[in-house]
Image (cartoon, rainbow, N blue to C red; front, top):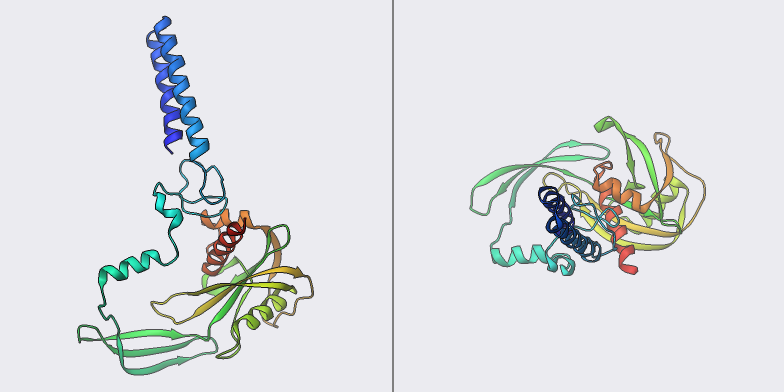
Length: 276
């Protein structure tokens, strides 16, 4: 950003001075400003690259379009280990107990996928309050990566939001306690027909902890082998390949809004960049 602004400012001032004083002094000033602008361009090219992948971002970018890394002037950002911010916040707060204790629980709805409860809880200050939340078996999602760094993604209609979504392959567990890696292998095979030789655990995330206990486990699948889809009778989707870098850009531009897909794509890009 500094290099970009310096370049524009240098050229602008050079033109103004040259127009205001067209004699030799003005020309000399114009040349000097041009040299200053050039120096800022070199500064931008050398120091303005993304610290992870080397991509030169546009001035307004907050996140790298190449790998999704946050662009910051804070030199410590690149060394910030996962959980550092959370650890700092915990250290500031000390050992204060924020636990909410269940007093009573009532099941309001028992569905195929969702189970709705209404509980009464005791708060840390001793008062009571109500909590409504959904219990969920859990789910898995997969980023299937081809040898040329393309991802197998799906397009399917999501009735709750009334639109077709671009997503990575995913599905819920069949029963409580099901092995999550085996579930991921099953969902990838059923939805796309692909199997994989190499599986990397990318961690878990909670989809909506304010009102649901759903946990999705994420996996990176490599060494793909194409097979036949085995969809459920009520399942309709198309799948296709998209370059990983294009998906990162679409996530950062807000073109992909599905949470598991955003998280999985950015995590996969980070893992692959770390291997370089």
